[in-house]
Amino acid sequence: MIAVLFVSFFVLLLLGLPVAVAIGLSSVIAILFDSSTPLIIAGQRLITSVDLFALMAIPTFILAGTLMEYGGISKRLINFANALTGHISGGLGLVSVVTAMFFAAISGSSAASVAAIGAILIPAMVRKGYHKDFAAGLQAVSGELGIIIPPSIAMILYGVATGTSIKDLFIAGVAPGILIVITLLLAVYIVSKRRGYSGDKTITWADRRKAFKEALIPLIMPVIILGGIYSGFFTPTEAGAIAALYAFIVSVFIYKEIKLQNILKILGKSAITSAIIMFIISCAGLFAWILTKEGVPKLAAEFFISISDSPVVFLLLVNVFLLIIGMFLETSISIIILAPILAPVAVQMGIDPVHFGIIMIINLAIGMCTPPLGVNLFISCQIAGISLVKISKAVIPLLLLIVLDLIIISNIPWLTTGIVELFK
Image (cartoon, rainbow, N blue to C red; front, side, top):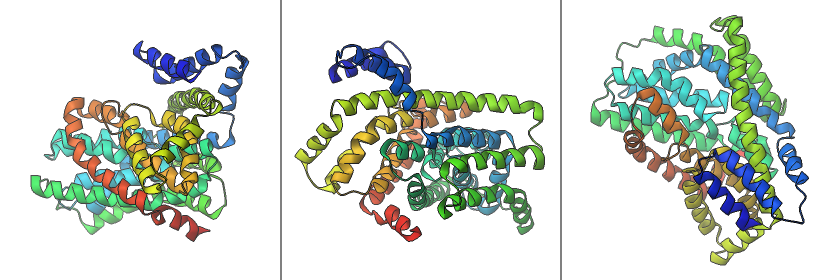
């Protein structure tokens, strides 16, 4: 059955079908070849894979991100970040990273971050004298913070797939996210010094106060969302609805940048994005169920243990494996299929499932910025009007630095689990 599953999957990919469709069809074909499994199981598993309360957070966070994109919230966050760092060498590059951090703490989506922020900042950086490939590459890499810094849709998927506390994952993602932000800021500053990307010397304290006032309402949003989750006042699922409601009120009634006649367009865009993700989760859930039924997690555990019973060696192998997988598979698919296989092996090795979840998500976030199929690269390429080859060369040094961060995070569990214990 496993052979049929993988052979049919790769054949369907070669025929040009979308990955999610190939996963779903190959799963159905595998069941048809297994006389002991009735076909009705396929329909049941497709439904039960998305019949989870925690997944309700995904469409609400997507709606919140879309409202931010159209409602002027991202523009005000950019202005505030510019007031903080715009005067330093490489000011606009630093703004790109800081704004991505703010946006990530609200939207939970990587692609939304690149689209909303990049549309403004990539042209602005080019006008300021930045090389177009560097501007686009930096925005693509900064956008990966969207799934590393909580709240994160990827963390929700991992929590659902492995039964890990989503609240603990959100807490554990803070320190790694900050480490990666600091790394990117230092990299941008050094590159800017060498290339002569100057800052804006005209920023005054009056400008900073004005920018802070305009951005105060969006800045309160992550405090409410994450504070409510960490304090136990509401669940991550409920937080998504609160984020969407907050973004709606701010965009429509306070900033008044979204007219009521545009609401249907925004809802439609959010619904399509949500439907695509849910379809991916549904098909990947059926695929993962077949793998589990056929004992693949047990085989994976035996394989890794046969190589070494050292957690350090295991994490090294998993990091290499996930970095390669992230280059070709969409993040949601990778998590739904691989997390139920790899997480039990990690636990067997003595690795905390929360720590392993953050490691897995960072790996796949890097994959979003890695050719040939990194979604962040495609979005930045489209905005900047450059080729995939050109942007790929620009992102490699930045990605190597984040891989270094990944090694640090992998080998210092306190950066993730230590903060979770402090909250407990």
